[in-house]
Image 1 (cartoon, rainbow, N blue to C red):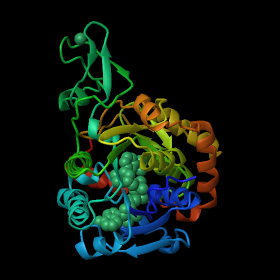
Image 2: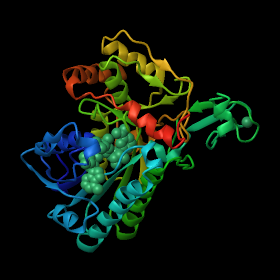
Image 3: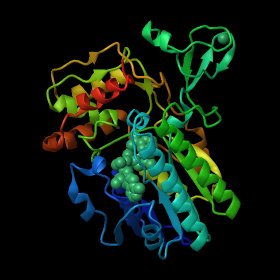
Image 4: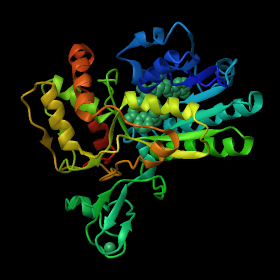
Length: 379
Ligand SMILES: NC(=O)c1ccc[n+]([C@@H]2O[C@H](COP(=O)([O-])OP(=O)(O)OC[C@H]3O[C@@H](n4cnc5c(N)ncnc54)[C@H](O)[C@@H]3O)[C@@H](O)[C@H]2O)c1
Ligand SMILES: [Zn+2]
């Protein structure tokens, strides 16, 4: 049974990867849905059909979250908003600064202004934030205890000393699960814009009494993820390379730890955030289990039945963090969130879909890497 107090939900970015799963769940729970999505070519060039997706019960508005008149239309009859629309790409945001700030920060500003001006009685606002707001994750120093290092220096990276050092005593640190109280040190324009989206929504929510939750998704993967967008989604990127008979290309030594969470679990978290009474907080959404990038590449090679091996480049990208994986205690406690899909199960499902969709797996990773190299952002 859905919560009675919400009937119609606006999902911005609802035709995107996470949006489509979220809409499916909303439809299953018999919510009515408005979708506002501009079909950004980078996210959709492989699948122009998605504009016809969604459900019969959903109203699709092809429009821009930065355009007041589009947002006004999309807010019609709505009593809750899930704000997913954004440009998504860490490296790319470092040379397309204006586009990322405009789309993510100004887009959110326009949405919030429209909500305040016309419908401040919105019963819930859920905004997609990101693990990237943390920058480096949480660490422990064997002598000094919990440690919060900032970015590794250029000299350190050039010397291939990949692990961060303790800011107090200089010892090499051990990674620990990152909880929401970690100081935010976003290390890209994308990450800054996600922080800004999150903080703007929480602030306006607090001020106008709109219950608001920011969800910090970790690395999301699953069927339907763009296999040809080289700017985001490391699983899709690796799968695309493997399907094109190329080895996954790993930066540093491939031992970076991340938290890979199934899109099914992320959609579940969106629904829980919508329905639970909790508000005024930023909450991690991950699997709670760390995986190294090289392990992820190895598993994908396995489930795709390929014969290749990963290429460990020893190269690096400026601003890349070393380790960050989620402490999901808060999501468990406040939202009753329980990740259901194991990496093994999730990857099998993802691989089965990717193999069937090999035709849309264009490996454009070299182009994206060349763009970074041109700007000296990758070495
Ligand atoms: N995929 C991940 O691993 C991940 C991780 C952390 C956070 N997030 C966040 O989750 C959200 C959804 O990500 P996704 O993976 O589904 O990305 P996606 O690119 O598949 O979906 C984003 C959707 O937003 C739409 N959009 C972009 N700008 C818009 C605008 N100005 N107006 C209207 N629509 C617009 C795009 O057309 C697209 O359909 C984003 O806010 C992203 O920052 C994603
Ligand atoms: Zn120390």
